[in-house]
Image (cartoon, rainbow, N blue to C red; front, side, top):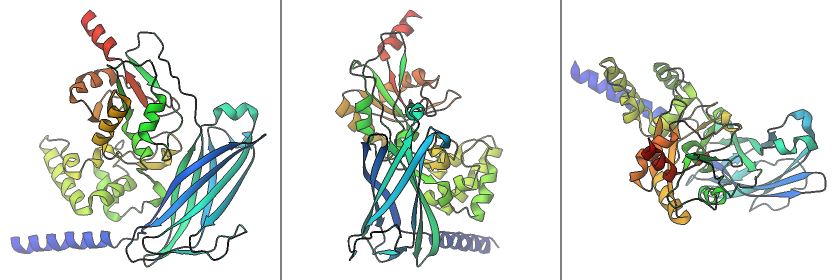
Length: 388
């Protein structure tokens, strides 16, 4: 009886894994490469280059259509005077240059790429210029191949840079939140820290950046429309608190896609059993690091509020390299409104205690404040501690 049960369990897990492996999927990846902004007499124009790459070793995939929907974040539709979009493919093997707006179905061969030029020209009311945060490029495109056909959605920010405040005020702040433009995949994380770091910072200061902004710059976010929730994810998500990012089927499915269904089922079962005996948090230990770091939709500032944001990668290497280039201690942190401070990585482990103490009030603002970077004034914190 026991042998039969074990055998059936193993077969069940194998079938679940096989079904997950052969799920509807496409090897095509869309990624922005570069952009430029042109200020004309009364209008502004963005030009962006996008690469679509086929990662598969053998499969050929077709793109039957591609549509671009530009969105100006921070202003209303009534403040937009005009907006025009032009899409121009630059296929490396195309015989003739396409001269009209018609998208001709195109085949991307295995391990090959094609490029697309997107131009957006717009004019807005003068009163709205200072409210414009960024231009969001929302792309809907078809993927057609051995897996069938489905729509795919991608989006990225074309930045609207702001002037960095290069001087720290001479007040007694223990921490200084630093305002940035709306960050995106076209931003290099270390270059951003370097650009916004005040020139009169002290060698003893610590520079921190939120894990979600760093992940976004690394391209670690997924449009919720790309997530196909399975019956398994719909079942498992019901075991989590409503405020958890894993309490939605799409949030749970994202974790399953990263860690595999078998691992998540086992973590869910063991975590649930141990929770009955008062042992909490075992699911997150067994399910992998992303289980704690995933932010579901609405968890990040617009336009990423419609995306599932994953945890950043290689945070230790990032902190070490950033600290070396900037000559200041650096940390990647996750802080919530309850005062819980999680340090994902830092170049100097001795800073752990002072970082947690300084960030308990959650001074960073990833919403309208746009202050994902925080400068910790360690000399003032230490001085205050001595005074107390």
